[in-house]
Image 1 (cartoon, rainbow, N blue to C red):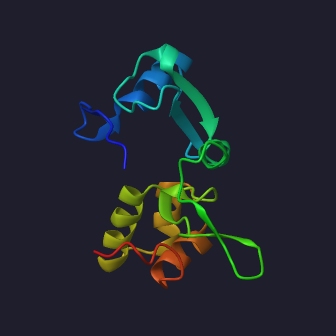
Image 2: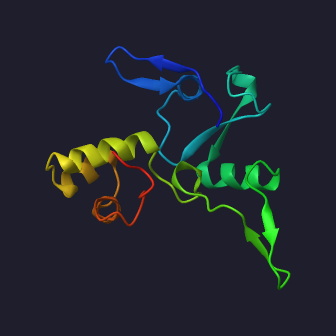
Image 3: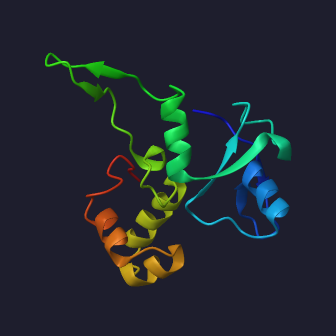
Length: 142
C-alpha cells in the first residue's frame, strides 16, 4: 500500500497532502468520487505537475490497465479470473474511505440513527444499512 503525507488541519482533522494541494489548485473541495493520481507513481511526490484529478472509477481502471493490481489467473476452461477481489477503497464503486467506514461503524455502535449518519457522509440510508447489516465493508472490523 502506498504511503501518503498527511496534513493536520486547524480543526484537528487530517487530510492527505495531495488532496489538499489539488483542492487549493482547483479552489474547491474534492467530491468523494474524485481521486488525485500521482503520475510518476510516487505517493510522496506532491508537486502539482505530478498530480492528476480522476474519478475513482477511472483511477482503478488506469491501475488495472497498467497492471498495478493483482494479476488474473486462467481457469481450466481458459477464462480469466481476478485472483483477488477488489474491496473497500480499491473498488471502483466505493464512495467511502475505510477511515469513514470505521467512524460510521463507531457511530452505529453508539446508537446514532442511520438516516443521520447518511446525511453526515452524504450517502444514502441504504449505504449505511449495508454497513450496519454487514453486507458491505465486512472486512472492516472495530
